[in-house]
Image (cartoon, rainbow, N blue to C red; front, top):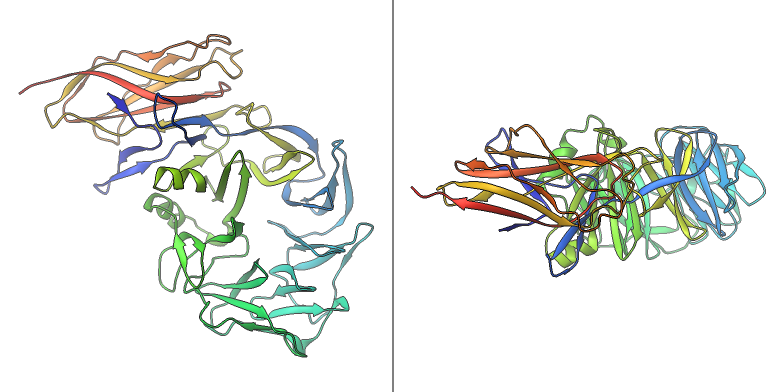
Amino acid sequence: MQVPLLFGIVASETAEFVPSYPLNLEPVIVASGISKGQLRSAAGAVPFATGPGVDRGGIEWNDVCYRAMGAYLVSVSAQKVVTKLGTIGGEGPVRFDFSFDRLIIRSGKSLFYWDGAALTQVTDPDLGDVLDALWVDGYTMTTDGQYVLVTELNDPYQVKPLKYGSAEADPDPIVGLEKVRGEVYVLGTNTIQVLNNIGGNGFPFATVPGATIATGCVSASAKTLFGDTFAFVGSGRGDALGVYVAGSGTATKISSRVIDDALSREEDPTKILLERRVSRDELRLIIHLARESWCFMAKASNAAGEPVWYRLGSGVGQPYRLRAPVMVYGRTLVGDTASFAIGELSTDVDTHFGDAVEWSFDLGMIYNGAKGAIVDAIELTGLPTRGDHSDGNTMFLSLTRDGITFTQERAISMGVRGQRTKRMQARPHFRIRNYMGMRFRGYNKALAGFAACEVTARPLTL
């Protein structure tokens, strides 16, 4: 029998079967003739340059890559030269946007401009704290959590108190701003209100009637543009957190109960970070939590007819290191949360700056109508020996009869370089009393790719 690979099933202590998503293996929907999909190692990162601090975000503007690294704004050239442009201070993720003639940087609670020659800070006392910032219709728009502010059209360093606006659909605090198709979305903790430019001498934006979304967002970092709209983590008043995609007056939930459970375990949800990554005909949404990261694949989900997720991590049990992808110079540059390095995303490796990463996946349960069976052989069919096999890579198989506890791992050779027809097999001769689950795991540089799992079993009769 062939067992589906795209996601598995495990059991919980609360008496329910729950989906188990692959770790560092990206589901790919492809009709290969072997199966309808495969698991492939998620893209790794190779060293590109080194900056003056830990990466906090980046953007491409006028064909140049700009990044916030430590306390500095830097430029990164195609020749791998990192240049300090000035000090922006602050900590945590940095928000970037740009107008026709300047780069807009929100770092900490301060606002800065880079015009291509000099870095300057907006010091108008009427600006207040800057929790988020963007450019729209000639204005730099910011929020201090209570009001929405715009700079003057003829002087982007000046703010007039008479031009303060607010989101009045709900008294919830404002946490961020997003712009989609020329409209500004003001994100509160319980609702999202839409503003449109109407001009005038006062605050030039007005609420779009009927467009308010009855779901809020947890913070300015917990949102990102996604396709032709934006995605965010939040909830309605009194509801549990989820991952949503904004629509016209509505928000569509895309997270499963497994992701919802992961969100509920976050001690500080305001530190959740969302990013998008578009490459190889796939639109990915990455949700970075304190201890783990999750990736939603939009096009694969449409093809599969159900949400397709997988997990991302670094090393063994460590948080995912790669952050803030910027497509520039014909490559995708990323930051590293564990060093001052800047990396280039690459599908040729599955390592993170040369370090191996753990990968694993569970399979669905095998069940023979409560009659049991003897499992004689388990074989993974795929594309072995494509990666770095200099250390003699091995993967491991463990089995479970209850979905919670697993047997001692069995080693399975993944072959050596050039051994492309290697058959990855185990012969456990394992007795199934009721049902059985399987888990495969590896910690190597093998660039794993699997298309099918075949199980040979002899049914038992009562």
